[in-house]
Length: 518
Image (cartoon, rainbow, N blue to C red; front, top):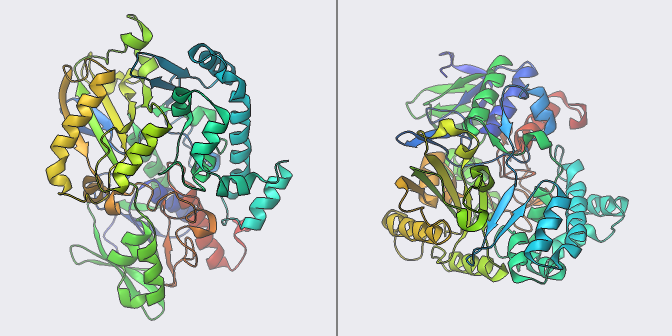
């Protein structure tokens, strides 16, 4: 989309990722002149659908929806304009011995499946699920507002009838929680999830964020890929009065004696604005776009201390035929059953993948999340073919030995071999593949060191610690400069919450009132 050539606006937003589009919508709806500048030729940032292989279209970064906030869906008029298809089972767990565990949106059906897979294991499923229902309820009231204090979180725990809930999530580790509930090692592998080392105290906090109640109609795979959602969000922002300009990389954010003054584009043009919003990460914003002299040295020290240590790989593969899952599902299985799969054999499997990353090397035995949207949306591949994507845990942001440009091919080939151990026709059906390393994600999307969350989802970097204590949250030390990306509260994933919250903070500051009036 090309905007006008005017050189002034009330608000300039750097980056048309989904949170930038959400912020643009709300600010334009409030009557401000809003310009969104996007370096790439398409909107959406991590929400993009691209034909990476001839005839095969992929959701190139974010793959599926789970947490898009209801007010964002309602206000932007997304319902009826984006079709979301929900696969069942919601997850298919694959094991090297040929067993599979199906998990469904219906807890009773999952319990029956779990009992057949591992007799006796379903007995603790209700308690496990109830824990995360409480954890999600703990987090839910604080998603679309200023981040809560620890006293507020403890008071909320009492209200939920579990006074120790927040302190448990903050001090326990995910590995111990899983082992306390399930004895079977394979079942433990199905329920372990953590941002990094699952033995780290506080690692359950991310699972609490992922447990916030969601709109069930918006949990699944958008028809047309994630880029279809980004396009509709952009249309909503433009409909509210915002202007979006693509192919417009920003060179720097301008600051004068009063605060933010606009931006300078890579081609030398200047766009004046009293409010500048960055959809980039805190580190990219403060170290690459803002003159260091405009920020206090102590603040810059905290920026450098903001942890971004968790890296991922994203493999996109075009297959000429469906994945062969007959070993797990029988010869006449429905391909939809394999639309989203996970390969996590055990807690130790998860830990070993993390330890490799922490040591500076790609995981030798990676945890793999494997999905194909074309099982539900065949238009994304040639007739009979499938577009398959894998999110791979973990990859060091900066390898200890070598560069990602040198490691890309051998790592990709090893990964294809690993997947073929579970999906026997994966390599033989392969038309072509593309592997995005952390360096590629930084180059394509501006994510420093390929950090998809703009800052690790680790203890100390949630709530008032996001991006870091004393950071100002969506606000910054520069008057009129705000952040709206995943590095702000409540965190990463496709929720729209950071963009919503940033817009609310801006309007509250402009109007001199509490943001609850927004």
